[in-house]
Length: 235
View (cartoon, rainbow, N blue to C red):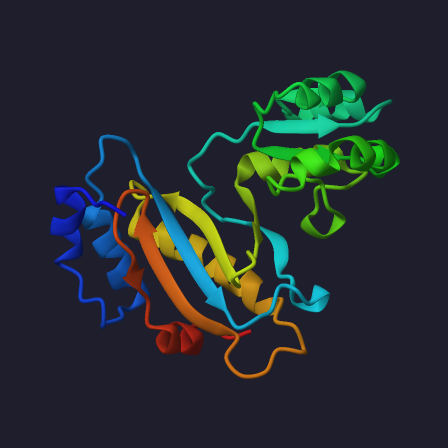
């Protein structure tokens, strides 16, 4: 991958063989963020799991105490009284047949899809192959299939994020903007990290968390001292 001169200059200031305490890593990510927009602070968490085993597919949602700083567009697929409930909670798009048809025609102006259990049969049959590969298919484990759509919409709007491990055993997630106070970013990281730790499968032997890396959207990765953070955050 060809890197810009700006990226190379920043990367040269980071010792790739060294790892940093959480507060130091966040400070460096904030210092090195120099894009013309408010970059996100991204976390890459490499786990010692095999996602091909169903019991080791790490997936969940967590409410970040200070939100993500991003405006999230929510689509609710439902019918009946839940339609008004979703609209009152602040959903950006609500419907069923009309929304399904728009998605099949290539419309994707939403970030999160929430659905009620009574429509999942229809959604799975028509949208599974479309939303599944994008990681947007509603799922009970992630809290996006629920009868309480009002609460689900409000939580997503307030900063509840979804995470899932990819086929390489890595979770990528944004935990806020670099413009956030460092303390808020630390709080958000700890909330996310604790959620992942609680999901450790009983079948995983050896190291569960293998490496942790922080970066701004356009910046290089900064390794976090996994031993120190695991000693600090215990579940």
